[in-house]
Image 1 (tube, rainbow, N blue to C red):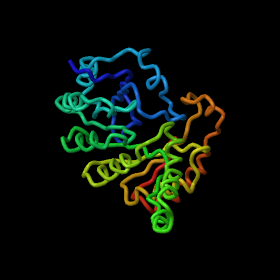
Image 2 (image 1 turned 30 degrees about the horizontal axis):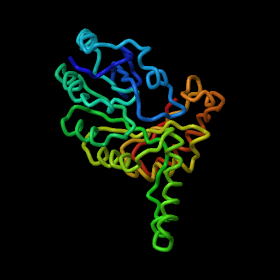
Image 3 (image 1 turned 90 degrees about the vertical axis):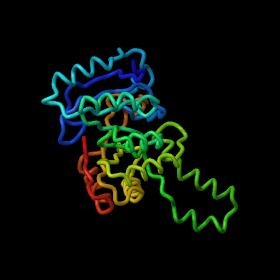
Image 4 (image 1 turned 60 degrees about the vertical axis):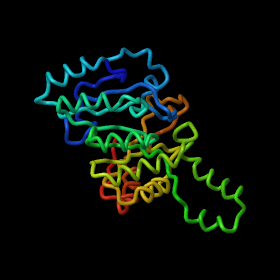
Amino acid sequence: MHSFIIKGIIETSLLDWEGKVVTTLFTPGCNFRCPYCQNAGLVLRPRRYKTISLSTIADHLLKYKNWIDGICLTGGEPCLYEDIDEFLQEIKRLKFGVKLDTNGAFPEVIERLIRKKLVDYVAMDVKAPIENSSKLEAQSSKLKDDVVAGLALQKETKYQKATGIKVDIEKIKESINIIMKSKIDYEFRTTVVPTLHTPEDILAIARWINGAKKYSLQNFSNKEPMNPDFKKIIPYKREELEEMKNLAFPLVKECVVRG
């Protein structure tokens, strides 16, 4: 038996992998605490959800094999599980495609899954900007180490606010590099929240992922956020997101707005 846990399923989705019909599977638990997360129950109270067995998933996929192209594995954070490889090997054995949704905090897992050809598409969230900052590098020769460290910490503040925790930015950078250097299909995406993201932030992210195949801007939903205070936040209007898309588009090969 596989200990890999699935706590949610959308049997048929036309939205989670562009151009494909998939079964979307949800893993419980996450190392982030994004205040705008729409799957708070899976993250904070996973025991309330019934575990769905691999055999149930396999039976469903095989029953509709002439209709379903593959799975979208999302969460929560699927890469938290050490035995994700075994689960995906079984999906591959059944001859279905795999799309992985991830927050990028586990580059070693992403690299391994790509190398072993266990994923066909990766969608990685880039939660906020964290530029390398040539300004900081230029200042570093003139300022004391503690001041430079303080400036670097300020650069990470937006990512911390967007994720609810202190994030190892180097791991996020590593995941981006692994994905962009691979031959796999992929996209980076940002859930755009008015209190967390400005047009300048989206431009900064686009600079960070300069040359990426695809960058998706997802509109924030205030219906069931992890932090109840975010219910009061009014999402950006579609035209505002389109303006942000126009800022990012010159730096990436494709930029789209969703939601």
